[in-house]
Length: 329
Image 1 (cartoon, rainbow, N blue to C red):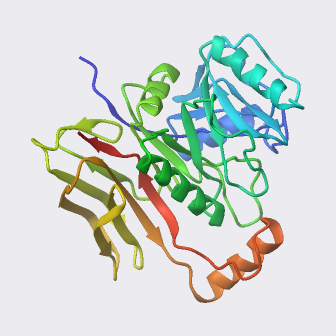
Image 2 (cartoon, helix red, strand yellow):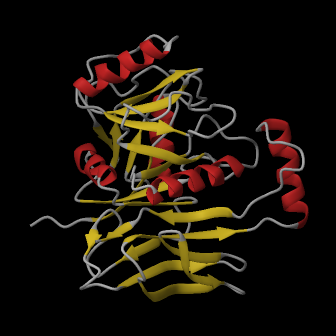
Image 3 (cartoon, helix red, strand yellow):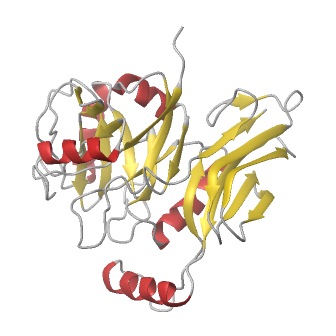
């Protein structure tokens, strides 16, 4: 009998085959050194790994590409896509035609950074029905927070699109190391692409800041994010994480209500809480933190200069990790 376990990976990566700085081989080695279990290579309009997945020193390297145009970006993942490169879609019809092409070959479609002001998703979701959505793209910034709020509003409307993260890695910048920031964890039987994609489609995933960041676990008995529990039988969830840093806040939401809040005044190891579920619907958890002082001022300056943020926009509570929801019927 196979058992599922938590595996970590990066769902959005670029090489010199598009606009990345590392060759494919250099990127694969970097992924291995990061300790990842899987990675989707998603060059712009180019399928770097080819038709089939392969294993590099224990890291599952998965085929994919990022459909890229001024209409928005979306990743397609899958084997046997029978294509090495595509033309940049110029019109909505071009884009829909590409989506239909990849879907007909069983590809997984993931909409990328839909609310990023630099690369806004302009097609909407009607008729597309993505298999997942990248709500956390690259290191945390305001647009990711707004995207999380949008995703939560979809859940309140009864629409569940499994949420993932992707570093959108292109290169390192001086003192920064951006690979696998954020990191997506999936609850899967193995690090083969079929098992990883099955976990993502089922919402059996959480996202955290990096491979070494605290993991955030939400469970209801043996159920994990993406599963459905019977509220008449199960009224308790457990939220646990490896550690909370000073100043971080753990929040648990039951639909539109925040049913639990814990603020860490010092570093806390192996945190775990049992929380009563109040209503049918969904429960999800996240850890946040607030930039203050010079860090907030420095971020606001950089975001205004490089991310098209409005002057005086402010800095919301950033997300350090979050889970997909467990549903309660």
